[in-house]
Image (cartoon, rainbow, N blue to C red; front, side, top):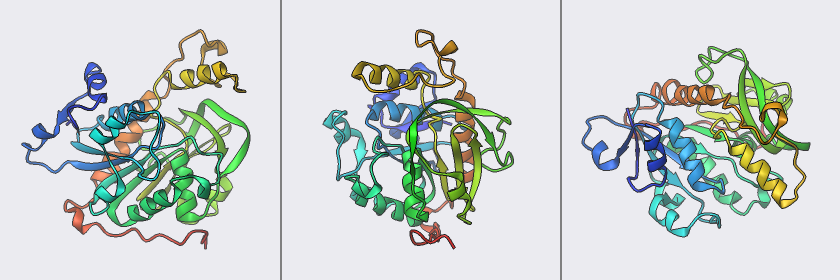
Length: 316
């Protein structure tokens, strides 16, 4: 089944060239099924690139998925034309009375700032709280995962001595878990971050289950016990050349940056990196959509039961 998007979205042309099954809203309305309603809060500076990456992965299932894009009203990215936001994005006030099967909260380039100093933190905290009553399952990515753990469970991020930058091997902790079902015993995922959430802090929270980790990259995936909140600390949605573009950008700016680990063949930036994480990225998103969301979300979203969360900082 297809992913349902706005017919004018820039990602459409790219995905059609990749033979991704797409459908416009007008065509989808003629089908007598209820599509999964997925909301994407896109906090990344490269909006169109991130949209395309996530839509590509959301399309890889037999389910019809209808996507809405969300931006913060308290901060508007300067890297994307404003007309793009006007054409394709909503703000929270426009969706707060709606319910969704799934919500994706992306990473953001603000990880070295305390959460409360991020300009849109009050708005994000409101969305995180809203997700407990209006969303069946929320997928938090990278900084979005750190923000979710901090807001819901009081687990803070910690600075790393140097940037974690590269593609790292990971081991799933539960290969029969809904999210990691079908994973190999070792899988790869890109990371690009200056901060970390320690495995010990996550393990100390009785409501969380560690799903995957890495000797080099640390905590990789976690979930609460009913999978209403999923946390992934890397970027399995990244394209083959995403880390390459980031590396050359920082080199050009004269910033301190090492060659991404386990990425370029022989650590030679002149060579094309192999795409070693694509299959597990597709499997992860398929598992989330099918085994977590589709199999459990109510057909009538008005029957969605609130997620019983704890107050920030309470780990008992």
